Image (cartoon, rainbow, N blue to C red; front, side, top):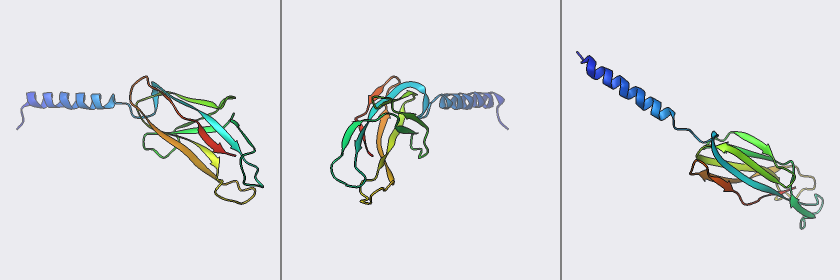
Length: 139
């Protein structure tokens, strides 16, 4: 048979192991870190694919975040009037930030096909603030 004293110790150790493992937070909301950046727009004339007709920081653009290696969108925000956006209260981990840009490789007037413009970053400390380079979108 088994010794009940050793069995009790084994149960306590297993319980502690499960408790400690459950304290590890995955990438996603619930932390103190921040990822921020700006959306920069290059506006093209849809009839002529030459140089951009205007360039500016874009307000109201959807910016998305994926947590860890998850392919699903975890959250989204809209860029503010100066093109800036922030994802607040993040845990340590891996993140993918992206926005949708017009696909200018298709030379068809009026084409509405979009492609993601993304950047991947790692948060390595609890209160880290990551400032991204501008995310450049074609419109």
